[in-house]
Length: 186
Image (cartoon, rainbow, N blue to C red):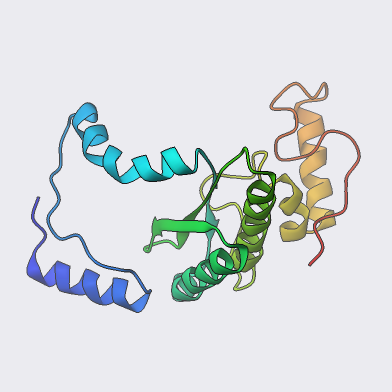
């Protein structure tokens, strides 16, 4: 599909405003999953080979703060000495930061999870959320109380206990098993 010049100009202006590197204006839409994977594989190969592990999820920020968020991710990557890539949906502010690292390297792993915490804090700062479109899961379980507060967390725990008294449904996701722990320090 070819994008119209008017649309391409609008998208170019928008992506420039949020600090994107460029605009793809000619897209081959294909129904073939294998062809899509073959086309995308070369782009993913270096990171997959050099950095076989990554943390990635979603942080949603106000659209007016996307540029600030991307700049912050660049600073975090530089400060932590890691590769951080971000893709996202400019229309709704859902950003998908990806921190790549070598899991065999204890120092890189520690820096990667520290960088991910920095990114979550960065996302909360301008009135964003750590959950966006993917929810809490396991990776962000320590951030839920920080975002919604202890009272709201207790309400959520009560609902979970009422619906799943034996704790069989997704144990350890959204809430840690056992007593509540303190959220990460600000």
